[in-house]
Length: 241
Image (cartoon, rainbow, N blue to C red; front, side, top):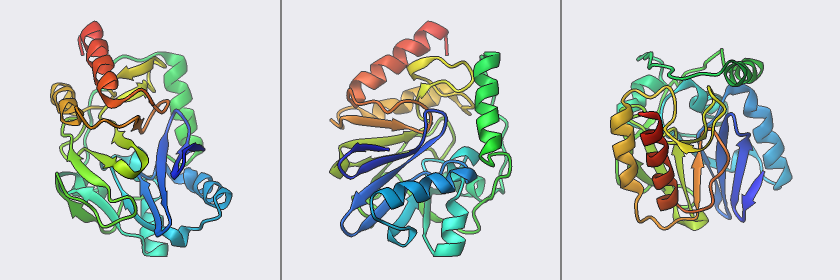
């Protein structure tokens, strides 16, 4: 799905990852769930590119619904996978967590779990190797993505700022569709290790001035990052999150 010139989404409002398309190659932000490999192939074909054009995968964190087909890209195609050092063990499957699920509605939760199961999300393929990154690092990848540390959802959660496409990719630092309740709009994401820290980390995005705020779950937000932060804080206050 083309969002803007050089900016594409793979997946849907339940689980999404993103392509930054530049003349010198592609940067993939997150890798969804395994079955979205076919979605990646269709998107690449639509823009006349191939897997060989992907120069790197940048993971916003190491959870199973974000590492998806990253190991397939790494092991079969030699694509390096970048993740914050604090989430490297999680991405390799060496560290497991069980954060609270929080509020749920049967229909929304069932829909999310059914989609994930159908797309192979219950068969996680962890990373065999990763390239560790740190807060403030500018990666030598198409679009020159900048790493912004966003601890809270996980210790090594990051946002990825790509000025070339007027976007910040936020992973699960926030969501615009709560996959367990179906509630729409910017709000705290479920399955968060430390909700208070995650909320505080959003302030690190203030002043970026980008149009697009792109979460791992939910509708792409094109009303600016500061407005997204205000909406998440309001939602957190309303729910007591």
